[in-house]
Each structure stands twice: as C-alpha cells, then as structure tokens.
Image (tube, rainbow, N blue to C red):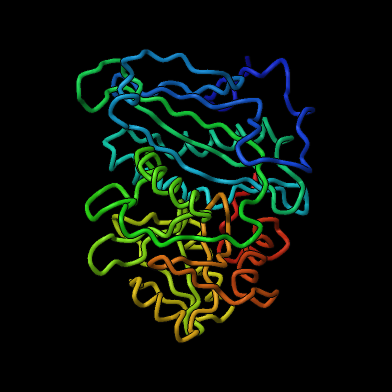
Length: 354
C-alpha cells in the first residue's frame, strides 16, 4: 500500500493489459486494472482509495437500486504526439457532474478529490491509453446512493467510483435515424439535462423499436402537437441549414454536451456561422424539400461526431447529400482530434495534461 497525496493505492497483482488487442477494440469491452473508490458518510467524504478493479458487494436494500439516485459522467483521455496524456476538458465535465448530482439531491465530491482521483488513476493505468488515432481511454466517474434502507428517502450515504477502459470511435459510418414523436426522452422541468441513469433506461424501448425498423437511433422531440427536435439518441444533434451550423439550445430537457460546446467553438474558429435555436420537425422536413439542409450529425463524448445519412420523418426517409472531405463535420472532428492529441495548439486551454 502506498500513499499518494491523501489517496491510498493498492495495486493489482495481475494486469489484464497483455490480453487486449488495441487494433480491434470494442466499445465497453475492456476495463482497466484499477478503479478509484470514495465513500460519503456522516456528512463528509472518507479517504479515497485506488484499488484493483473488482465487483461490488451491495445490500438488496441499497437505495440506488430502488429509487434511481445514480449519476455518471463520460470523459476521455488521449495520448498526445509527444507521449504525454491529456484528460480532455476535465473541469467542464466536473461542473456538469455537479449539476447532475445537485438535481438528484446527491452529495458532491470536492473538486480536488475528483481531479486528483482521475489524474492518479490515469497515471497508474497509463498503459491502457491507446496510441492509435481515433481511440482513447474512456473515463467513467459515477456515483450512487449506497445507504441500505428501502424506505423512500434521500440517501445519507454515497459511493463515488471512477474506472476506465480503452475504446474505439463509434459510428465511423453515417447512421440512419428516425424522428420520434410518440415517446419522449425528457420534459420541461424534468431531469433531461442531468446524466442520471433513468434518462437512459427510459430511452431503451423506443430506440429498440426504431432499430427493429432498420434505424440506428432516434431523434428525440418535445412530443407535442408542434414538436421540436431535442437530441439524437444519447447525443446532441447538429444540422447545417442554409450554410449555418444549427443546434437546439441547451435546456432542462437537453444535455449540455461538452463535445457540442467544443464543436460550436471550433466552427466559429473556422469562420462558420452558428445558431443555437429551436428547430421544429416541420422546419426540418421543409429543409429537405427545398434542399437547404446539407449535413446532420450527432455530437457526444462516446461518438465524438456521428454523421447522419438518413432521417425518417412521419414514415418518410429523407436522404442527406453524400459527405466529402470538405463536409463541416469532418473538418470539426479533425480539428478536435488535432487539439486533443497535441498536434494543434490548444488555444482554448481544454487539455488537462498529466
């Protein structure tokens, strides 16, 4: 056992790393050797530990299992061209984690615990950071209500865990999506802006139904008589309409995506006009009829950029023009990759180098 600035570390005696084929990664398949664990009890955070990745032991009465007090974040670490490791936009991810925890009435880990825990964990498992372009080390901080008491209540105990695993890029090929107007992902005043487990569990059924019909994902809408576009699956969504990059504004029903924010900033750097405004399904349908829409893509931590080739609106498939190397989504993705890997100057100070 060694002590690293207040975080105790117990290293694994056996590494799974030699068994990983980094040339053929599957998203979510591999988990790195260690995880950080920190408990909140008696009104304060206990000493954090980094320990070998292992299963958890839970009481069947654990509150998170019954009432949904569970929140997660999704982040990535990249290997830069000079061999260092970059945790991308760590502070913004922490801020969003805090907003999600506040919405779910959960304890908030101190920023130094979150930051130092991530840094130490990535340092210990640095061999798991892929060197291949497009791949990265996915970081999953999450918290759950750990108190064992089955009465309906806000928990007095929580557990923070951070683990990681190497992942490839998702949606390398353009996808097909269906505009969903029957089921909704979130509603005004709800938890749509928070990364809580229930948002994702509730989205599974309509997504499965869309996949049975041959689509990869759904385009979520407000679901009312004049529906407006909200998100694409588990990603924010962006359109190029009349030469402008257009995306719905963040709200209490739309996640404040870190990738979304990054792409909007980079589009401005490249001289492209951007608009954050509401987009109705009717406007989207009209944009196909008058050929004013030229691109559509999802934006998220896992996928980074997911180009869309087909959008089904009211049972009619609308095709996007064929993409080229000059497509905006390609330029944005490339520029973001260059910044993350240190090939291009990080003028916005997004990289947290360790």
